[in-house]
Every structure is written in C-alpha cells, then in structure tokens.
Amino acid sequence: EAKADGRATWRFFDPRMQQALDASAALEADLRLALIRQQLYLSYQPVVDRAARVTGVEALLRWAHPQRGEIGPTEFIPQAEKSELILELGEWVLEAACLQLVHWAASAQTAHLTMAVNVSARQFRQPGFIDQVLMVLQRTGADPRLLKLELTESMLLTDMDDVIGKMAALRGHGVGFALDDFGTGYSSLRYLKLLPIDQLKIDRSFVQDMLHSRHAASIVRAIVNLAYSLDLAVVAEGVETREQWSALEAIGCTAFQGYLFDRPAPILDADSMVGYASLHA
Ligand code: C2E
Ligand code: MG
Ligand code: MG
Ligand code: MG
Image (cartoon, rainbow, N blue to C red):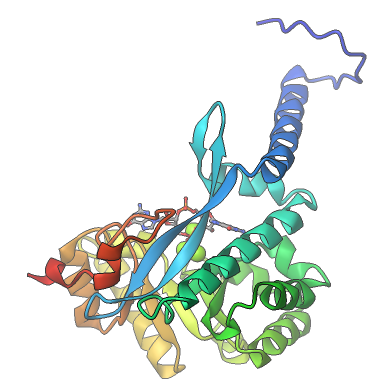
C-alpha cells in the first residue's frame, strides 16, 4: 500500500522501520494533544479487605480517543516513557488522583479511602520527583497518608541510595509505597529489607494460575508469608472468582483487588461503598 507522502523527509533504508518511527511519533504527538484536550481520565478499581469492604482504590489511566475509543495504558504508557512526556503525564495522573481524594474527603462515607497511583520508572528517576509529589499534594490539599505510590521491582535495582532517599523523604510526609506485580521481577530479599515499602502486590498471573498450578499456589503462599515476616501488607491482584478469593483468604491474604469485586470505573458508585460482602454468600 503505497502512501502518498509529499513531505521531504529523510528516509531510512528500511521502510518498515520508517513506518514504525512515523507511527510512534504520531502516537506521541496525539498523546500530547490528548493531555491538552483533556482526553485522559482515571478509572478507579476498589481494593477490599477480608470482609469485602472497600478500603481504597487504584487509579488506572485511560485515554478517550476521539477515533479509536477507550485506549488502555499498556498501549500508550510505553511510548510516553520514551520521552519526557511521561513526566507530564505522571504529574497529570498524580494531580487527578489527589483531586479525587480531596473530593472524597468531603464525605464521611469516602473520607478514609486510600488512593494507589502507578509511577513509571522514568518519572521516579527524575531528580525532581520528590518535589513533584509534594507540590501536587500541596496544590490539591490531599492527605499524603491516603496516597500510595506503586513501584515495580525493576525500578529499584539501580542507584539504591537514590531510590531509598526518595522513598524515605516522601514517607516522612506520610506517603506510602507498594511493590506492584510482585514476583515477576528480580526480588532480592535483601532489597526488600532495605526498601521503605508498606505493601506487596501479588501479580495477577500467580492468582490466575494458583488453582490449577501447585507452583503458582506455592509462590502466592511464599509471598504472603514473606510479607508477614517483613511486616508488610499484601494485596492479591486480579481476583476473578470466588474460588480464588477463598483460596487466597485461606493462605492468609488480607486485601484483594479484581474483577470479582469490581472492574475499574471512572466513578465509584454507592454500591461499591457498601462493600461486596454479598459475594461471600
Ligand atoms: P497494574 O498497576 O498492575 O494494574 C492492574 C491491571 O490489572 C489494570 O490493567 C487492571 O485493569 C487489571 N485488572 C484488575 N483486575 C483484574 C482482573 O480481575 N482480571 C484481569 N484480567 N485484569 C485485572 P490496566 O488498567 O490495563 O493497566 C495496566 C498497567 O498499566 C498497570 O498495571 C500499570 O502498570 C500501568 N498503568 C496504569 N495506569 C497507569 C498510570 O497512571 N501511570 C503509569 N505509569 N502506569 C499506569
Ligand atoms: Mg498498579
Ligand atoms: Mg500490578
Ligand atoms: Mg501490571
């Protein structure tokens, strides 16, 4: 399919490579516009306790694309991470999440809810990360103790002093930290002891397999035990069935997140505030 292209641009030898570059540049340009045109929004997925009461949510980024419809973060975050655009995007997410916290603070029914926000490697690595978070908190007036930043293991491996310094500084203001997708990365027990984290999130791949794979079940059990011995909270991600939920409870898991309770949604409805205890019946 020959594309009419009148622009005088430098051509790479491999036309497929040029096409890929064009596509990624176009995505980045689109994403910049999306920020300006307010096409980005957050969906919130409840996190529940053993009684299936909602204790908080995780904010998940979405893009309401005018032509393509709703686009999930796995389709555009990796591209945004290739440039400084991720810094702006990350700040937008933090601010939107904190504004939601402030909104929830106004009602007794929602004032206790915690907000988990995913942080990208490049965003966390930037020298101004501490200030970025503190300024958003100050600007919005959100309670830092309700904010939990989700990091992944791979982000923590290099320049440990910088990582620990940043986490400790923010923790000093009350901000919490969770290790996301736990078990899929390189997890050294020594790092876990050094890092000022509050919570491990068991990756959903283990939860999905635990009922038909003894291997996956053993990993889940090991993570829960590890969390207990290090005094960390543990959340199971991707809980889709009652059977998975029961198995996780039996192992000693205390917090859960997944389609069984609710899918991510832009609005937390009154139903979810009551909790999902009826699922137990
Ligand atoms: P994550 O942080 O591990 O988020 C959990 C993902 O699992 C979400 O996908 C969520 O919709 C999905 N999920 C939740 N429950 C279930 C379930 O029961 N079954 C299944 N199959 N999936 C479930 P989503 O929203 O597509 O996000 C994917 C990833 O994109 C996130 O993984 C996170 O790493 C990244 N992400 C999302 N929002 C942001 C953001 O604001 N900033 C950054 N840097 N990354 C983000
Ligand atoms: Mg997450
Ligand atoms: Mg995860
Ligand atoms: Mg993930």
